[in-house]
Length: 137
Image 1 (cartoon, helix red, strand yellow):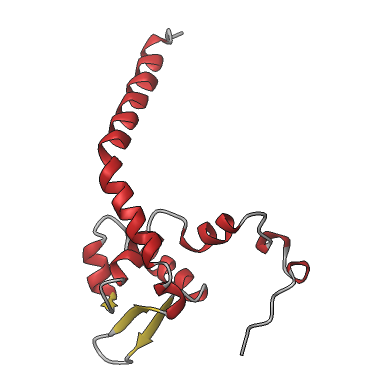
Image 2: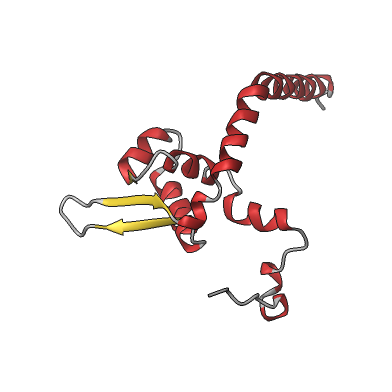
């Protein structure tokens, strides 16, 4: 059965997209969501496994990002109600449709990381140089 098309007029203004890229970025945007989804391409992961893979994210932020991905229908959360707690995360069919995009993002990042870092370093040097040129009062 085909899903009914949603009339955007029935949605809050903050949910109305002017461009399909907005819809995509709304659900995968941010520092950690794409990385979480990329790691879930390998299969089901527990919270602790994701935490180790993303060592610079705090548990609180990771939990929030996982909740948002679940609310957007991109991941499933399975709580086994055990002690110690066991919670598994996996991609939904909708989340799995992002695989080509995530793999392209990885390839792009691999190809351009050196240029990105060089540009960041150059921008920092310009900013630091401008700060050094400001006379103190």
